[in-house]
Length: 255
Image (cartoon, rainbow, N blue to C red; front, side, top):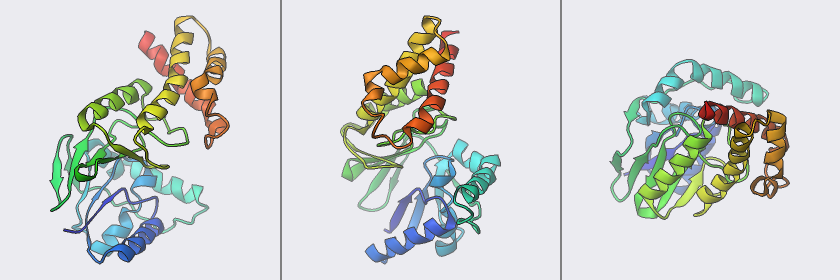
């Protein structure tokens, strides 16, 4: 029936580039967009698609994601992206999703069906994963990444582990494609192992009355973390923060 876009990129300009690439592959129009969550690098490109295909283009998201983009998070992410790109994204406007979707819905696009998955808080409270049924491929947004630590400021380690088990049980054998990095059939297992290497030492530290500094030492020594420290993008600048978030979550669970 046409082209369905899963996340539109971080700006008007990136969205325009994506449209140029799509047109090299097919002359069919874009007929639907899905936004996986409310972090702006995944949806600020909506502007380009609305500009090219009209304000009635269906842009789908979970209710919480739609609310966040239409509210404070929308303009926050627009301004953050301008700052982070040295204003290369100027001109980008907020175009929030206009259609609310739910877990379990199936969208039929002729010879392709897309099934929607949501199993609670992982990277954010409203991470939408999209299973391309015929291809045994599931786009997972930022609930896992190939070779960097996902931003956990809005997320949950325990929720992430539960999400992985739920979606694996529901979808079965899949090529898991993240919003950042290359996809693989083992991505949820390999990334989940790394994340447990951060969370479980923090959980142990909390139970044994070890402070945050001690917990960080345990995390860095954990072989699940140490094995990836030298090759993971942004490891040194992020591991302290995400260890702190794991420790806080473990404290909250303990009390």
